Length: 261
Picture 1 (tube, rainbow, N blue to C red):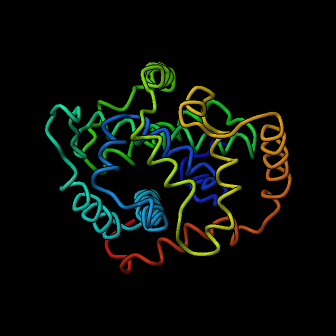
Picture 2: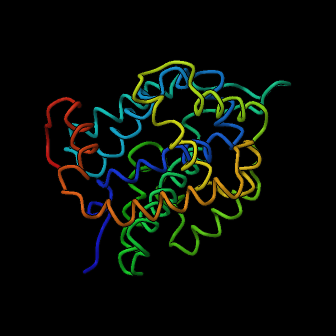
């Protein structure tokens, strides 16, 4: 049976890749510097997670009213994130389509990476459908439809080309450290951070793992592999109400649904 984005996007295990997606994003200098200068998400990481996941879940599963709500919220947050190029910065603008493309690309690639580690490879037909449907995550904002690579082969070319040009600078390293070693926050969050750091390091491309100076040796690799293997055995056996709890939780916190799905 061919599956689509709605069939896999609600799986809570995908949140295991949240750190990977964020670090891939901030390795892009425009994004990393913008976050460093305009965001306090290192002090309030749960707010950042809530806003991102509320947006993604609304676009995939929400009503038209909920999509409009999260779109306005994201655009308000982006409106103040801009800087002209100068001696200290290459400049950035959160409405820039190229930057938005990279953000959406990291979310898509991370979703597929985690899903396939837990559930195995997607069949080609499902992978093609999911890829085409994921473009909505960007086009619901300012990403022109034609900028989303035409197919998965074109996406791989774009991904590899962009990834090869990235290098986590000192600003990105500082932001990543603040995120992965939070000085404050809910106790529960701090308790899971060692696991979050392990998953983030294990899921990142090796070169960026080194750029971000994430600890990694044979013990880390074995712990990561054992964790993924355990998740692959246990997670699919959980009842759907637990696996889809994050989606239901974040959508439930949005304004009551209005309009048509």
